[in-house]
Each structure stands twice: as C-alpha cells, then as structure tokens.
Amino acid sequence: MERAGKLITFEGPDGSGKSTQVQLTARALQEGGYSVLVTREPGGTRLSEAIRGLLLDPCYQEMSPVTEALLYAGARAQLISEVILPALAEGKIVLCDRFVDSSFAYQGYGRGLSLDLLHLINQFALTKLGNFYTILLDLPPKEGLDRSKEEILRDRLEQESLEFHQRVRDGYHALARSSPGRIKVIDASLEPEVVQKQILEYVSAYLLDQDQGYPF
Ligand code: TYD
Image (cartoon, rainbow, N blue to C red; front, top):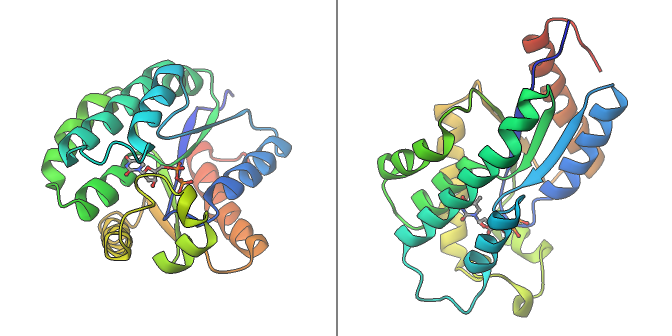
C-alpha cells in the first residue's frame, strides 16, 4: 500500500529552536523509511525567497500590515503550488518551518488584522491543500529573542517590541485552543532532546492514525 503524502508544519516564536527540531524530525522520519521534504516560510522557492527578502529587510519600515499579509500569502501560494502539492502527490512527508498559523499569529494577533480577512487572503493560497498537522514550540518571547540574534542582526519582524511578540505568543495559544486536534503545543524551554522526543510522539501518533500501520 502506498503511503499518502502529509504536511506537518512547525510554529513558534523567533528563537524557539524550530529549525533544529525540523531537521531532527526529518532525520528520524527518514530513518523510519519515510520520504521527507523540508521547506520553510517565507521562502522555499526562488520567487518566495525573493519575497522573503522584501518582508524581512529592516529597510522597509513603511510596509503596511495589509501589504505584509498579502506578501506572506503570495510567498505561500507559490510554495504550495510549486513545492508542497507536488511533494504530497509523490507521497512525501513535507515538514514546513512556519506556515499559515504564523500569519494568524503575527499579522492577526501581532499587527491587529482581522482573522476573517487573513482567512480570506489565505484561502487563495491554500486552495487544493487538504488537512495538515502542526507542532507549536512554545516559549516566552523574551527568552526567544535573547536566544536569537544580536539586536543589530535582527530582521524587520524580530525588531518589533516585546509587547508585539507577547501578542504573537498569546495568539498562538488562542489558535491552539481553537484547534486542539491539529495544533500540539510543546514547551520549547525544555532540553532539545526532550522536545524532540515529544515531537516524535505526536508526529508518529498522527502518521499512524493516518496510515493505519506504518510506525517509525
Ligand atoms: P525567520 O528567519 O524564518 O524566523 P524564524 O527563524 O524565527 O522562523 O523569519 C520569518 C519571520 O517572518 C518571523 O519573524 C515570523 C514572520 N512571519 C510572519 O510574520 N507571518 C508569516 O505568515 C510567516 C510565515 C512568518
């Protein structure tokens, strides 16, 4: 029986260790015989990486929240059509470092845009994409920012105030409360090995549930 493709997204604040955990998860799945594709948002295609440049460059302080939301959705639409849908069609497990919940958390709760508007904008990007599963690495914003880069090297979003990042975190919690079946919250302040173990427990339960009998 062929395995069906699955999309698993990783969310959390800047500095929560997402990228490392995505890589560790990819390795574990590959060792379990899964074919895995790792990608990230914003980015993952030539065009989406170019949009990423616009979004994160601190020189564009004038960018309005709506422009920001549309650019993230544009980068997402290209990634979905060019990379994610073809990989899912080949039966791959796609691990994506950030996805649409980042838009709800940052542009919705952080910037104050309406969630309905964000759903609408992202509907265009997400058409044709089925269900997905989400790991949320939770961390107090101060800890995340301290763990990330020196202040001078921070991108446009990382340069936002602590209050902004606190709203983003509260937003993630609200999203997790409203989708408890899809979004699984893990305390990212724990040791990376412990975090990884919890991720694999959630991911294997999800894949087992979906595939009915393919443990890794
Ligand atoms: P990135 O360097 O990938 O951050 P991290 O390493 O923390 O994942 O930069 C992505 C930034 O873009 C991050 O601050 C979150 C933000 N973002 C949004 O505001 N909306 C979105 O839809 C996405 C995908 C990211």
